Length: 220
Image (tube, rainbow, N blue to C red; front, side):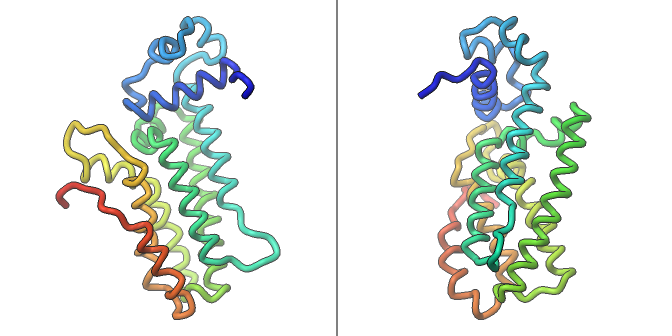
């Protein structure tokens, strides 16, 4: 395996540290120390922590846009929908620091805020297209207004799920998040979709729904 370039090592280490202890608790000195390099070496590649965060965000943005592409030349299926959700929540898990401190990060960087706003608009357009594709394929029965609401509500769950886990489910002072806890968000979205299923879709949908249900702890 080829050795990672210093710039890529900085991004990789930063992502791990941000996820583990929270972005606000990590400085460029912490990142440099974790890598065993000098702060000056780090600043040669990134002028500050904000630039590191933005670079990580660009990778996340590209990943999400790739995930949300519609299949060409064939109708959508429930397996496609499953793939969208699994891949999106895998991305949320790998970039969980971003969702944990979303409002703070956007307030600190106008460039990041503008990029995220554009990404949100793109995701909502794609979300509506996906749900409309499922309607046209006979899996969902929903009006255009309901399709739009499904896209909006799914986005709200995706982007607020980490915050919900940290503020409502976890015990105070417990920094632990697990991939299973993040993945439970898929079930929450499927619960929204259940009422719109056609009879044709119910038999396929139920096993998927059961697969993604998992206790998340906490007294709600």
